[in-house]
Length: 242
Ligand code: F6R
Image: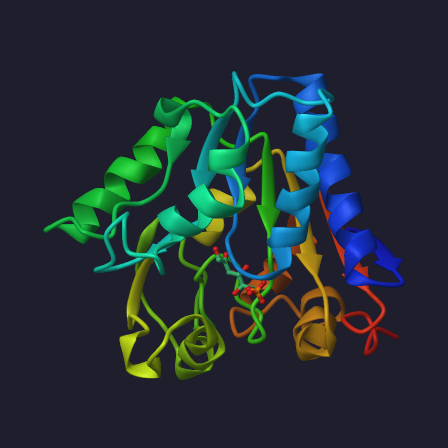
């Protein structure tokens, strides 16, 4: 694990975007794994700037998002599809046919998980997976559990995650209780992983991820076993590291 600690969230965003940009410059046909959430918004803003400045192009890039709420359609403004369109895809030259997000509206979510996993395999797996970190140590929507789930699967969201995500919904009762998420195996198969975490609400999860035992109660702790992980933190998120 390479751990970089910055003064503030803005620097974390710039560092994250620079690493993604380096990947695209090295291989414009890269397959990127992408998260939603508040933390990556700064990374996406910086990527848009680099695209507008002519430094990077997404024309040949394929993307796979980590997760999607079950039951929300693409045009629901709380869906992760909508989030990605707003914060990245509508502002860069990624091709619509190269965008992949689990479909939360299907009749058979288990079959959708299998289809998604297959699509990732057919694309050759992720060259670079960008991650955020849940307050409870989740990555994607892999919630604290007694085991690590391997492949894309249906998730029952924890109260902790439902509460954390309620800020995006007008009514907390509207937060979906289930999601589709890449598994820990899917994430760990990425050639490179970059995780961004900022703010004091992430400090305990960061400590458990970096210094704790590898334990499915902190799903991100498995990243200790990945050969190429870069963790980008601000001072607040890094505050509990010894
Ligand atoms: C969402 C995802 C989640 C978030 C995590 C942190 O696609 O993968 O694991 O990264 O919940 O979210 P924020 O950045 O909003 O604190």
